[in-house]
Image 1 (tube, helix red, strand yellow):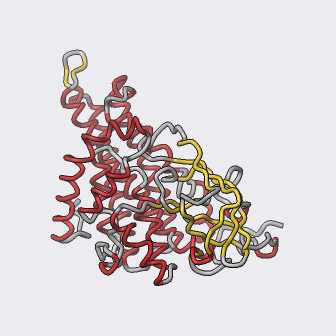
Image 2 (tube, rainbow, N blue to C red; image 1 turned 30 degrees about the vertical axis):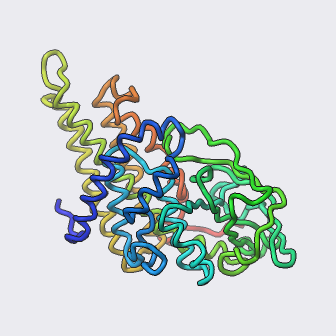
Length: 389
């Protein structure tokens, strides 16, 4: 079905993104996978084209598209269509930048946003800790105020972009845990990665998303200037909830685009491959499987496009964002799996892009809130939740 959410301006931007991915990203991708991260200078190259600060206002050197997520969507789609990823650019651009735009004061914006928009200051956000996943109220990393600075101690894990990051938004406890207010006492510090006592651990070896550096971070008496507190003390939980809709949309955009790419690769393979002298595409099972995949992805795309419009209008509820993420990532999993099956044994060989899509797809039902968490949010919205005794 024809998509109706984009204009001619969007189409021109898509053409630029497609050319960039084909000419710059695809040739360098194998090296990025081997390195376990995208080269930092690559982000600076993207910054020169205006691709790393799309929602940053022009006064800070950005693209001035803060009112819309559609340009971010196009860049993410074109990257996924080529069975590639841009490392942790999605975290930097789709997650972290909105926090700075919403909660940083003017002095902080002047200090950070120009470099963030240019791709010369890369960022990450550190929430997850060993033993603390989706339940942020269990965060143990502490930041004690001492005069004009905080002293930060603790550890984080599974931090996307942690290796490349120049600044990390660290969620830390600035007041003691209170059972009566489990969501209180958490604050966000924008920590300079060069600070004494800030250690970047190993780049975690994952089954997929090989170009996305994912780090363990530790903080030992790290002194963070009080001027690097984002927003107000104790408001982190509220702040983190603010951008969940866009975070879940960026995951959903990648899920649908990756599923579309999988169908394309499977269809091309079915045209070329012969089984017992007969083209694979002529077998009824192959046609039926790909028809099913096409239908599921079309439904997911329509749902997603509707949600993107709602996000731009600031009308996308947390529950609806959860519905979209749940549905699109589950569709991605089913479709990529079926398309790998069409490839047969070759689908398990990494030189075929379907194998990469298969490995990359698994995490989308985990990060940004697991499928189980999405179901909990949806059930609560339906009035099905119960208070525990």
